[in-house]
Structures are given as structure tokens and as C-alpha cells.
Length: 610
Image (tube, rainbow, N blue to C red; front, side, top):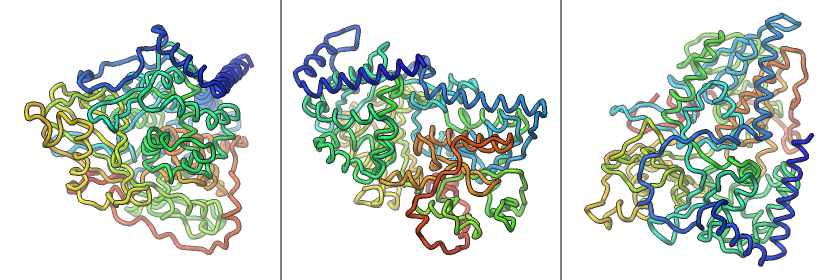
């Protein structure tokens, strides 16, 4: 109760402060000056800086201490403890028995589900279609031995279930933390950047206030003031307000609260492309508010980290070993092609592509929504729970890696490029120990939006690699004018040694306005079937954190059933827009092909990647 009271006081204090500042621009100016002048609070005001000051490889920083002090982290830890308690009960055979569970899909959601089921004493077997684990975080080696990544994976401090999982696996040292700042390229000043610096030792929400007030390059004083009315309801009402904004796009929300268009140009376009690979006019405002709410209320929520190596080895393999050490199994190269039913709709078995039949007590789908929709049994196709998935689909994205012949004077950490073509990028030779190189840079970049459905006027995902790389290099000329492009001085000009282009036609679910109401609960109307995946209902949207949490919640559903408990989340009601439709039975179309794209992964052209 004392903790709840403290949080209420902090929230109220911040809200009152913002209301006062809203009513008095003079006070905002005074506060800004005070924050900038207080050396103990933060460094001098942010100004455009050249990448020349940030060329040394990143050093290891400790895990931010306040990550484990949030309500969300404590909630994640409590759920983990519930699985251990179940294990103790199973050991004493106190009215419960060990269940055999078949999980299909070896991304983070399926792996998390298997991990927590094994913690609870059950017997999970995970079947992954591809020869590698990870799904959307998978990676593989090319002919030179370099790892090709499906995406640029950023671990925010506001990922409580992931950090709790890292702690349980004892792999916290697999993360390399960047300085606590948000860096944006200056569109009008090629080669220069500006930052929002979060002062050390200052609690939320005041560290973010200091970061915003300390930056004078991106938003004017008036624009900062005009953001306040839109954020106050989020702070005062919390998650209920955030959920209610799902029907509005970012632009619709901005217009409702009379926010200047420049806020969209300076902040929201970059955030939308980073969070869901999509432009603000097509993105639900609940996505942006969810991120902002965590960043404002958690002191280290916006701090970022990179894995110190490729995800299959440094993240997925430790989970696999954990599961196997507790009696579970993880089996690759085993695609599920059919869900076979009993007459009452219950799952009878799974059929693998090689003809093997898998039987279990419970079954979990942890594949992407676009893959699962192709194997929904005809018997289930008339159930609104499954038909609502028609309203969800993955968003396309492209990931690029560019190897240069020399070291670029790049920043330490993640950068928002503010480019029409590029979302975020990082020099992985500075941010990842496995890719560290003091003489040459390797940039990893997210190319988004990359199709008309995501907001691009050009269907880039259908273009050849050469055009995608050429367009990217043109954009990099603005970010690195002294090092990239024909106008760069010969003495400092970097040459591109090689590149990789990985297309993911259906990545995380497209969080367009109104999608949340169609996201299914982990519990399904089929007694022995459970749903996992980042698109399933949970509060962290389509992200690594959302995938891990969804898998964990799926494991909880099975544990509750095994123990005869009622699940706290239960079966989510299907929206009336689906219930009112005439639902004709339809046969599953099946998974087409045997490429990574067939199973929701990324594909590198001209290379037989796993």
C-alpha cells in the first residue's frame, strides 16, 4: 500500500507540475533554464554534435539498477514465482499431474512458453519449422562467417519480462547497455545530431522532463507546451486512456488535441517507424502512448541495450538448454502442417511435414498470425475467436547490414535517422562485442516503411537488392557527408565492402487503428489449445517483450488448467463486429513453400539461408 501511495503521489506531482507549466509558459522557460544550469542534474544543453566525437567502440556499462525496481518488473517476477510454486506442488503430487505440451513455433514466444512450462514441472516439446531458432530474431552466417540478422534488435529498460528472463537464465551480461540518451539526426544539418540526455540518478518522471527541457534543437518552447494537454490524460487515467486511443491514428490524435504538425515531423514519424515500421497516419496512437507511458514512468525505461552477439547463440540457446535441462525438448526442422481435431473440436494431434503425428495433453501455437491463419482447421473456422484473426496481419520490413572499409565516425548507441526511407540504425562495430572492429564499421539499418500498406509510395520490398542498397547509401550521404558518397573527401571516404538485405514480408502485426479489439486471448474456446505470439493479447504490443510475455501468459493458462484454477485473464470476448458476421466454413490453405518467409521469417536473396 505504501508503494501504491508513493506512485500516486509521484504521478499527481508530475501531473500538477505539467498543468502549472501549461498555464504559465514563463514558468516553463524558467524551469528549462534551471534544469540546464544545474550541473548536478544534467550535462549542458543539447546541441547538434558531429559524429567525430563518438568514434570509439562502446565499453560495457552495468545493468541499470532501477530496471528491477518497477511495478512491472515485480509483476513479472511474481508470475515466475507462480511457476516455481506449481513445480513444488507437482513434486508432492498434491492434486496435480505433469502435462505433456506440444508447442509449435520457435521464436521468443514459443521459447518463453517452453521455459516457464518446464519451470512449473511440465513436459514441453517445441517444434520449430526452420533449422534455427529465434523467428524474427533469427540470424545465420554467410560464406564469410559474418552473421546476417533478421532485424536490428533493441532491448529497452522498459522490457520487464525480458530482463526478468535474462536474470533467471543468468545471462544479464549478454546485454551491452548504451548511454541513456535518445539521438536524432538533424534533417537540416547533414552530419550532425541532437540528443535527449537523461541525467543519472534522477528518478522518473523528472529525468525525462530534464531530457526534454534540455534539448533546444528539435522542439520550440511553444511546441513543448502544446504537447502537455495530450499527455495529461495519459498520466492521470493511465492504461484505460491509452487503450481508448487505439481507434485513432497518431495524426487523428494530434489534431484532436491541436498539436502542431512539427511534432509529428520531429518526433512521431521517427517513433512510428521505429515501433511498428509504419507511418503515423496508419499507426494507432495507443502504440506511441504505450511507449511514452513506460518511458515517462520508469526511470530507466528508455535506456537501450544490444545483445553482445547473435540472438540464436546469445539469447535462444540459453533458453533451449534451460528447457532441456528440465526434461523438455526443442526440435528444429520440424514444421507443423496440420492441426487434427476430434469431433468435439478438441485437438487430437499435430502433423509434421515429414508425416509424424504428435500427441500431447495441451497444444500451443506460437507461430506468427499470418502463418497460423493458413492452418486453422475447417472445424474452427466458424468460431469467432479464430475468425477475428482475419483483422490482423504482419507488416513488411527490410533489414540491411552494410560493411565499410574504414571506421565511420558514428554515435554510440541507437540513432533515429529521420530519413524518408530509414527508421533507426546503429554501428554494430561499436555496440556489439561479436561484431566489434576498431578499423571498420558495420551499420545495421531498418528500412521502413517499405511498402504502400505501411505508408511508402514505393513497394521497396519487391525491388532488387541493388536498388535498396543504392537508395540506402544515398540516404547515408546526408548522415555521413564527410565519409559516404561522391562528395566526401577522398581521404576520408568510406567504400562499401559488402551488404545484406533481409526481407520480412510479414513481421510484427500491423498496429493500425482499431486492431487491439481483435487480438485473441491466450486462452481459447478449445479446451486443450492455447494461443501465444506477440499478436495475442498483452500490454506490450508487437515487440520482443510482447512475445516473451505472451508465451509466459500461455504457459500460465496451461498451468492453471493443470491445477484446476481459473485463469485471471480468461477468454477474451470477441468484438461485436465479428460476432455479427455470417461465418462460413473454410478449409485451411496450408503453408506454401519451405522458405523462411513461408514460416514468418526473413529471407536473404541469392543465399540459401536457414
